[in-house]
Length: 324
Ligand code: GLV
Ligand code: GLV
Image (cartoon, rainbow, N blue to C red; front, side, top):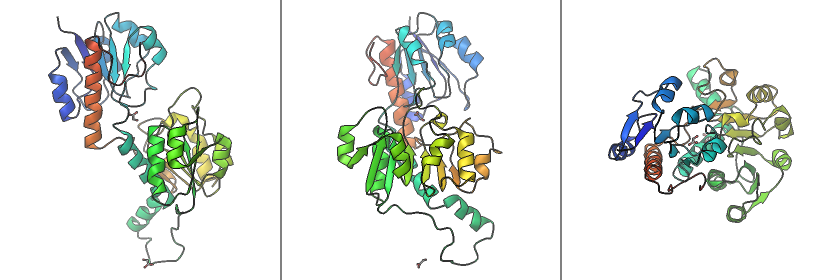
């Protein structure tokens, strides 16, 4: 009997074609919206595998309903804070994710947000649209540049390193980083210095968040953290919204504790169109599109299908969160 799998969304073209060739009975949610929880809980019953997205919560409830057939969970994302990793591991279920293939796309978008926030792109576009563009003025819409500046990367993982590499090309001379552990290889390539979060906040002109959301990093960016930053600093988050205490960020921007912010992630997602964040002239928000290039999404999908397949047939996953 072929294994039964649940796939919570249609995948990009190549990934979808590969999925359809699997020797498995596939239930796939076909709409371009998150699978309703009750549908997921109904379909997962007795399944051998699950291919999910970061919008699907994988917790004890789901694992309990799934039952003992479940061998593999494959998320089409590099982040896995939507998965209760300990619970999945203790059930001896393999867990796959999609690192590396989205590093460049996400680093591009993060660099773009840093540039956009530094150069006041939101205000600039609004000014053109609103008829406020009267003439060229020496100090109008002046932002900050990168030459001779200090970049602080919170979490110098694959994406953090790629962001620093890009921003160095714009003239950043000094790279600081903080995190759980030192990253000697990346640090050497970038000439980056490992510092405490406090020192990073105090010294950086650009603070870019590239770490995972964990118990330790949850809401680490609160009002007190923004208070430590330079009044001219630019804050960028392309990791997870939960790392930021968002009401505190709004206050910090209103109180001019920092100059501006660029966000690809928020709390909640989607952000309500009347969110205060969107009314602030000095905050650029885009809708969690870090990895959104066709090339990358296809690669992510393919990697997720390969992880699913390996797990179904008792092999170790090409890209696993842990080894069992
Ligand atoms: C995107 O945020 C991902 O985790 O892949
Ligand atoms: C700007 O447009 C300049 O010519 O300096």
